[in-house]
Length: 439
Image (tube, rainbow, N blue to C red; front, side, top):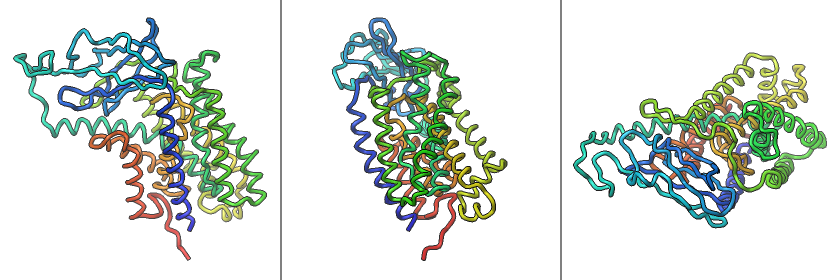
């Protein structure tokens, strides 16, 4: 019964998430497109910059599917420039003089699509085969392997971010039985706090690293304040689980629209580490920023795992998540452990928000858009298990990214949720969950 309720609520979350994503796509102006090589395959790792009146507005690096997007501050004319130095070997602009497209007009509310036609070796300016010598195209099998290697790296990065944000969600459920729908807003609070300290016009303009550290502290404090000021009084009064879930939905809506008023509807990037030279290592192209995000996220997961296994408070967290009554009877201060879980969950959610904002872009509803994948990771890994949330997050991120090798990028989350259903059919308790007796 408990698992059935969770699955039903999960699909309620999915239904509520869809209109939000549609609404987001209709807000603000942006330029973007998809960069494809002469063979029709996506070209990743290419830097594209947007300027207005000689001032840089933003930049983006094409992803594994070749797509890129740069939000612009307002309607108007912009110059779009492709950095030809970041093009892979053997690929060039079809028109060498078209590296910069001047005066691209963006209308109110428009997401303007911009194309850069590319040519390969042995083709003339019109893209037709010519007499220029060039190496033979790589075999199809090798091309697929290269694409899968690039997508695997992207999936590990994305999955590690999901795992970091999902740990707190899983531990909170394990220790309090609360389905915290507002957990996504803790992610956004971390990203927005770091943005105001780093890139806001009225902010102090700190470097991103100290800004991120302050954001983690703010996320931890918000988590502690919510536990002490809201959830603990409600649970002491005997409020039911469904009522608590409904309250968490209201809290999510309240916090999200407060963030909308403070931050605004236009997505914006951090001031640091935006434009970087792409490093090519065999079939994999990445920026130093993406490498640091991946390594840091994995290191945090390892550190949290060691904390849960080796430290006294970590063992207490796992004990309360496994059996709250038994842990309390054994002398564990459950109320203090629950407070520490909220502090840990809030801090990790804020860190995940900073990393997600650095990897993608900071937006007022970014945590809510990530919430569905967080719940998928928690259910897939096993309810209440921190290690399950880690494994589930990595698996969801890998499936989401690898699916784009064969299917449109818009379906990547659908395939991740499809894997969730398949795993639950074979192992209903999740990867690390314990089988429970019904009846």
